[in-house]
Image (cartoon, rainbow, N blue to C red; front, side):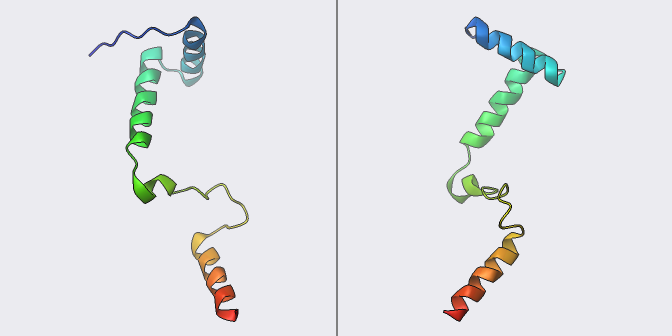
Length: 76
């Protein structure tokens, strides 16, 4: 289905640049972004937080972090 959307010129320019960088058409990029938005908007509850700490360098492996925390609790 086709959808007609009015966007400001600067948004169109930005879309065209991003599409060119990705080697995709503007329409393909918009479809991809809408699909990604739907996937993110559909997350509920704890699923929203999966990967929330993946950028943290002080934790490394989640299981190891959990074991260290429990060892600290046991000492108290």
